[in-house]
Length: 420
Image 1 (cartoon, rainbow, N blue to C red):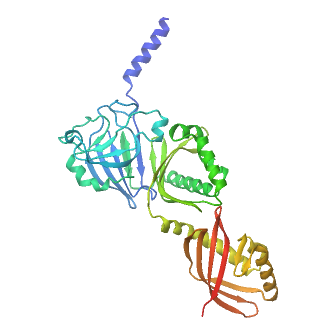
Image 2: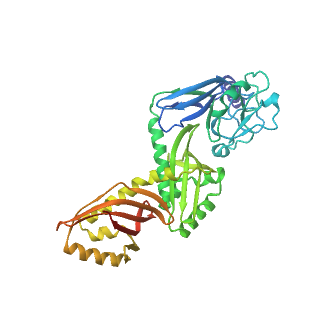
Image 3: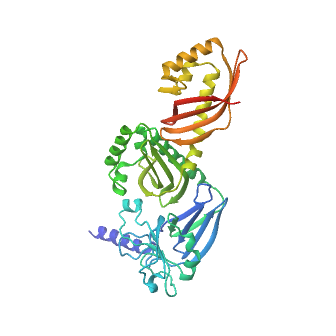
C-alpha cells in the first residue's frame, strides 16, 4: 500500500508541475487553394488577422482582440473558453444588442461545427463582436471581441461564409512548404467525391466514416438510402464542385466550395463544407458536412467546368468518324438517338455503313463550340467541315443535344444545316 501511495503522490506532483497541454498551434502555409480572404485569431497573442491568398499569403490587417477568460479549447457550455478550430461567419446582428457588452454589431460563428460535435463540445453563441468600452485581455465568456471602432472599419470584410481559424497560436508562411502536398491531396479528394456522386457509384459512400458522420451530421444509413432512391428515380445527375478552398484545422481538414447540382427535374445551388479526418487505417474520410442553400447563379461556371468533358467526348466521336470505325462511332449515341430524319441507332448504322462503303471519310473539323444548358442535358452547336476520299466536301452548322451518362455524354439528337 505504501508503494502504491507513493506512486500516486509522485504522479500527482508531476501533473501539477507539467504545464497543461498546448492548444492548436496552427500553421497556415501559402497555397492557391487557400481562401482568397479569411480571418485568423491568435488567442495567445490576442491578435485578430485578416489574410489574403493572392500568391503569396499575406497579412492584410492585424488588430488587437480579446478572447475567453480561461485559456485552452472550449469543451463545455459556460467554461469561459474560446473554441479552437475552423469556423464560418453565419450572419451579422445589429438589433437588440447590449452596447456595453457587444458594441453595435456582432457576427455569429457556426460553433459547434461537425468535428466539435464529435468531440462532444457543448455551448453556443460564439460571436465576433465589439464592446462599448475598453477591451481587456481574457475578459470574454468565449467570444472574440474587437474594439468597436476597429470592427466598424473592417465590417465589410466579415461577410457570411467567411472562414475563421481560431487557434492557441497562429503561424503564417508566404511559402508553399511541405503542407502543399496536403492541400493538393484534399483538392483531389473533393474531385473524387463529386465524380463518384455523379457516376452514381457505390464508391461514393466509401468517402464517409458512417459512425462519425451519424454523430456529427445526420444518420448515415438514412442518407445512403435517400441517395440510392434519387439515383433510381433520376436518369442522370450532374454535380460540379466550383471554386474549391481548403483550410487545415486541429487534426482535421475543411474543404468548402460552391456546389451546382442538377437532374432532369431539379436544380440546386449553394455552399457545401466537408470536414475530413483520418480513420484507423490512416485514410481521410468525411466525418461531417454542412450545406447552405443559396441562389448563386452558377450556370456559367458550371458550363466552363463541363466544357472540357464535352470537347473531349466530341474529339473521340470525331476520331471514330474519321477512321470509319462504325462500332466506336455508334457508342456515342443513345439507343433512341435521332440524326436528322433517322431515328434510332440501327437507322444511323445503316445510313453510315452504306455511305462510308461508297465514299470513305477523309477529314472532319470543328469550329468553336457553343455549350448551353438543355432540359435533357446540354446543347452543343458548332461549325463542321467535312471532306471525303472522292473529293466531296461540305461545311455546315451542327447542333446536338447531349444527355449525361456518368462522367461522359451520349448524343440524343443531331442536326446539320449547310452554310453558304
